[in-house]
Structure formats: structure tokens, C-alpha cells
Length: 178
Image 1 (cartoon, rainbow, N blue to C red):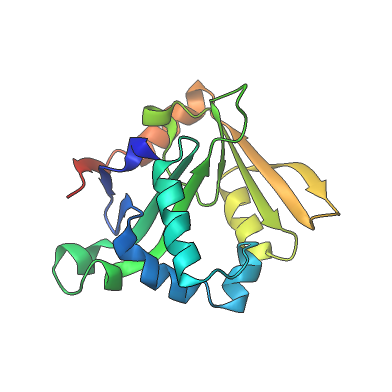
Image 2 (cartoon, one colour; image 1 turned 180 degrees about the vertical axis):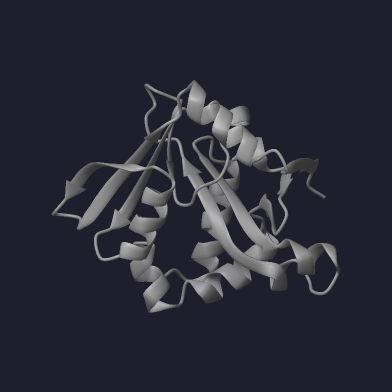
């Protein structure tokens, strides 16, 4: 998403940076894992398809993707940015009639810059670890799809939750991504 292409978020242990072409090779290696494909409901892509996907995500107005880095290694210069990659975070603006709703793949701030008020996570029914993680963040079951074998969990950000989220994120520093 154009909105986050120059945004870096630094917490205590991780840094979130925009998903750029430099990250594609490592990401592609991860996505060769059948287990990761299953857990993320993803299909295997060729390396060229992965580069195209990264370009599409970078230019798309309804997706926001960050790569999660091990901040201690990255800031300490112990490894390259690609070698510090530990995951990714995605927001999908799924309702054109309600731009305050986003599907999220991992809990992360989206409240202040994007104005997100509702988060939804779609998780494979067998992925009990992810379901439990989102429930620990107070996500509640919205629906279950037997056809897709997934549960949709939701969280509405009211003023009380927004205040709590902002308190939890008070240590996060937003910087210009280099």
C-alpha cells in the first residue's frame, strides 16, 4: 500500500518495515513450506509470481503489508535486513462501503494512521494456535464457514479499546523507512 511504503515502526523487540523487492527471495523460501501454505491458506507461487505479487501489494490501495524484523539483530547490525526477517503483517481493506474495516493476519496497530475500527481474522479451523492467539487479543467469533473450513474472528475498536491499544503501542516509534 502506498500509505506504508515509507513507514518503519519500531517496537522493543521487532521492527516493521514495508514489504519491498529485497524481501521477496526470503519470503518465497518461506512460502515453499507446505505447513506455512496450509496455515496461511496460500498457494505456492513461482519466484517471478512472488515478485509480481510484491509489486501489486506495494501499489494496491486496499492492502498494507509489513515485514517483521528481529529488531535487536537488525539495529545492532548483526545481520542483513533479509536475514533479520521473522514474519509479516497484513491488513486488507475488505469492505469498499466501510473503509474503517480491515482483515488482519496478526495483531498490529492500524488504528491511528488508517482509521481502522474493525479487524477481522480469517483462520483455518485446524489452526487452533492462531485462533487462541487472536482470542487472547479479545477477538470474538463472527462466523464459521464449513465450505472454506475457516472461522472469522472480529474485534471492534471502540474508544475504550482504542485507548488501550494506543497505551500498548506507546513504545512504538514511527520513522521514515530508508
